[in-house]
Length: 231
Ligand code: C5P
Image (tube, rainbow, N blue to C red; front, side, top):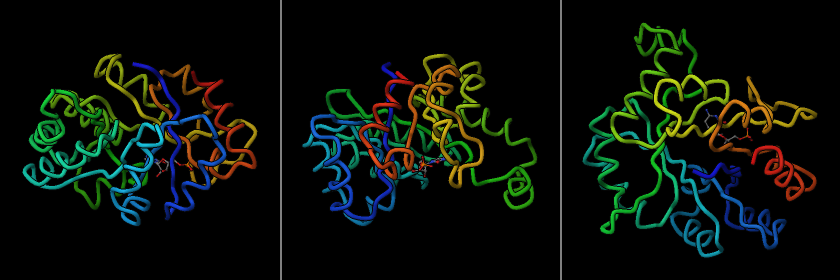
């Protein structure tokens, strides 16, 4: 599996997204489309970006009953996205149904990645609100293993967790890691950040980079710097 840098297109319109991509001329970076852009523009934004030659990680974090997720995944698979995700909390049955829905008649399918616990969820919230009486780390590793056993390809996690995820689930189980910042820049609202170079050392398979590229004075230069340090 080829490591790659995925740019988080956290924009609210096609126009803003396409203006941003004008910075890249002949380069075709892997892009993440999240809920904001997808709900604003619908599947057409995915088709447009695929036609322009980009790989797409559709970050919609599905979580529903297995039958509903299977049918939704079938629709997303037809959009020819390259990676999609769901919440591991939806259970093994939901994850297996998602895989079935994603698999195209020719046997090909997008990569399917699980969210374990959102980084916005603290251990005390998990214990007090969700009544999960385990350490956050144990829950993350257990959900990663559930995802692996259901046949998924990997998890979204912190670069600081990649070694442990690989130790639990195998080196070929993918780690998709946000929270990336250059050493000479601010953290924004991210708490624990890692440089692209450090993420590579720690074994990340994909880094997801938003503002360090989207808000840079020269986005192409920032993207090239990420690629240089990570690949
Ligand atoms: O701008 P920044 O580099 O912080 O963007 C990171 C991207 O990764 C955003 O789209 C954010 O929603 C996403 N993400 C994250 N932390 C997670 C899961 C997703 O930052 N645990």
